[in-house]
Amino acid sequence: MWEVVAADGAFDDLVAWVRTTMLPAEREKDGTFSAETYVSEDDRVCVIARAAGGAPELAEPPVHLVARAVHQWVFYRLED
Image (tube, rainbow, N blue to C red):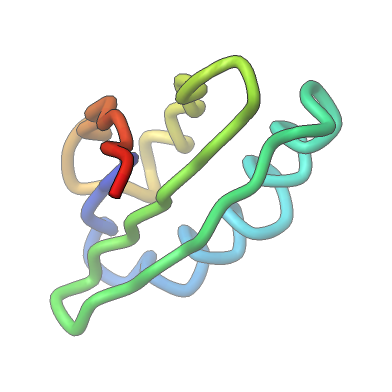
């Protein structure tokens, strides 16, 4: 899980960077990569990413788009 808070006034640009730069680059590196992107009312962007080789470490966005550094966590799926 990858989560970041947009800098003031940069939310739309951050979302655009995630959708048009970061995610396509990850898909190009690994054909098994998939992701879901979520946003919140307080200008957070969260990406849940999966790949056959395990959870990928996702890129840091350009610093002018974020209020703080990205937080990333690795979660492991439990079988039902």
